[in-house]
Length: 301
Image 1 (cartoon, rainbow, N blue to C red):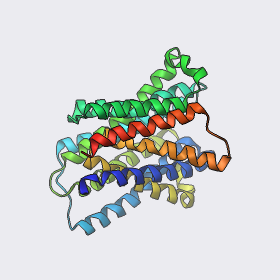
Image 2: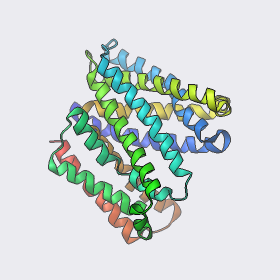
Image 3: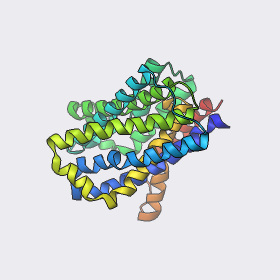
Image 4: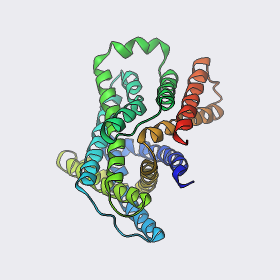
């Protein structure tokens, strides 16, 4: 049963991430995009330290032994995630964000490729099929059919989207590599340790950059500390759950299962807004769930 703990961990991570994104979005108008992004790290780190301390106390374990590979992967993951976020924000500022968004959503496929290349995480054929089908469903729901031609004609947003999706995919695989490269202790201890180290690296790097080039955003993120605490807590909770999941199975399995968030959000939105889903959206959601089912069939064997 412990081997399947990645399933509830992934669902918890996706849920906490939705909440964190909502709180961060509410801060953008007040302190800007970069200031709101910084909240995720600088206010998440104290909660990460508390989660790490509580986890080690419950597990009865001390700090695991760091290796050069663990530190290298943690640094790679932290930098790749910051770069991917910056590229995504650049894409969002453009009219053609829909094209970039479509390529960002190819992340599960890129995660599977990076996982195979860097860590040797092999998936069965049915798992690859599930990832491709679920990703196709996401694209079908997200992109208006009238804009499909732009996917192959608008090169700049295509490049931004692929780079951002690749950055997010590389960060997920690198974090898994860091977790598995630690020595001594349980997988849960490894996950919480790398979570804390990565948030510390990201807080330091992004904080230094903001202090040097956008001090107003940095100070703004500190000024709204009351509103930022919730985003920091949910961010740390989401990161802890993601990393626990990464410690137990291939990152591609985790990121594909996380796509279940989209059908759930679509159905909730339908109830709230009263807007009926169209045939294209229903087909897309069915593909997402079917793809997840295929991935789960090979992941839980």
